[in-house]
Length: 218
Image (cartoon, rainbow, N blue to C red; front, side):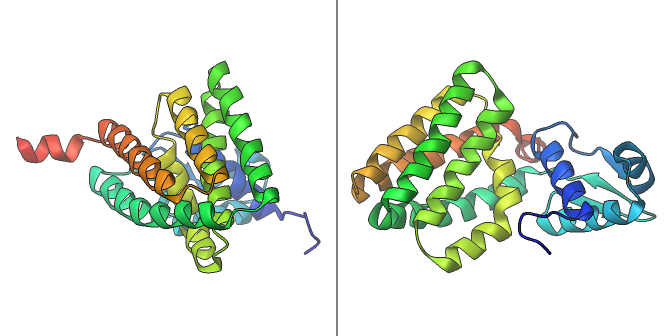
């Protein structure tokens, strides 16, 4: 495959992934091969490939007879994701502060500026996408190939988790503080800020997904 060339299956996968992560396709929504193929003007083969790929990424749940549903993340799913995120980001942010490069900081500043502009403009989709990009660039700054592999495996579910916050400007402000600490190579400050950042993200996700706790309490 030529560099920069995306197959039809990859294009369909990317479109559906973005629509799920951006909230265009709601949790529990049906994804029927025939209907999606007609909507996108493609055959059923790339749609089938896309649904299989998104199932592997944890964003859709397959059903019999050529259809799937957009995954509905439970409170238990959110708790599991937050546990993994806490362990993963505690390490990646610390390594990023120790190993960051001038080029890496320039990339991080660029996505942060994009997030800040979008947050101030009230553009939730763009702000959340840039917020997720910020975390992915931090992983690249850690300069640890295994962490990079793990991030790619978890990317879609983590992008979903990072999209659960509503206070766009507060999230961008936390990212700016983290950026400044990484620039300063202040590992101790980075560790404090990451803990606070994780706490914010956890509370936002739990606020949106409290159903199981409420049910068990009853």
